Length: 373
Ligand code: SF4
Image (tube, rainbow, N blue to C red; front, side, top):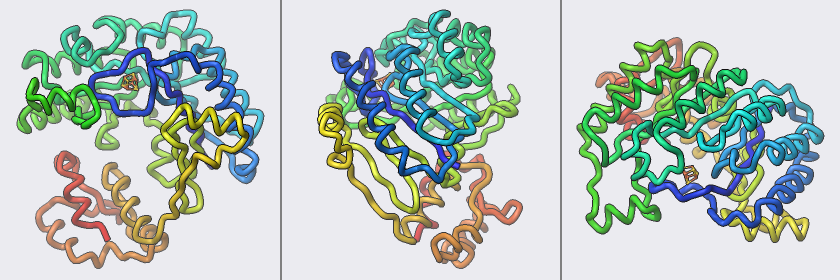
């Protein structure tokens, strides 16, 4: 079992807070499609022992490429490997999801859209420099549901330094009234090389206070629970059957192949990745030598233990100490900090697995660090 991720490194406009790999220069779009197809053809013969179950187009803004280009890239993948396709997700900007595009994506076999709403309010969207208007995400979700997608996910951002005091509750109310079965809600983080980072450095804005962020987290968990969503990972909420299979596979240590500039792959305790540079990637493609711009690291036993903790303790399932011991040789049950954290209620046993209770997830990273090897 394996997953395939394809990174589309183009966006119409740079959002205020974003430090993903993308460019707003679109002139290389066609060349990029050719290069992505070439990398798929080059890489897949090395994955002949795997059966792929999930395909995920992320970015960047995959919907910017149009359905025909996405279908051509996917076809290259379908032709080059064994598939039992359970989930094909495309990240989409609401602005790109007109009815004809929705029909074409559905026709191609896409069964899940991840729609970058972020907010439903004009002042927030304007500050974020999103290209879609306040009601566009709503209509995109309704049109996508009408077009017959099995699963729809919405991205939202909270902890933003603009908007009125009821901004987040109104965003939640709108999101939860829509026919989406998945919600990804992220706390806004200030990355230094972004416009938001610069605004903070120059003193033009201040980060929202911690009590605001915690209050908004509380609103989020309450509203999603009331709407019948399961909070199954720190940032992820799903209605019954709506969990992201692709991301869940990552978190379960399933191998994945990443295609495109900046994309990461993982298999056999080894992680490797392409350079975050479209120019380098296209040059490597032209030379037929993708390895020339790749780097890799082999995870040692301690890396494996720590990574499993970092992903596992973000989820309701938590981590299995026996699996960790087999995979890394580190015995979580004998960790010197464990008893103290159990007594403090910051971790708990549940069905033989160790987890962080949901109400402690806002400080989950700090708890996890205490348990690392
Ligand atoms: S559309 Fe997405 S990837 Fe592109 S700049 Fe905005 S947040 Fe980043």
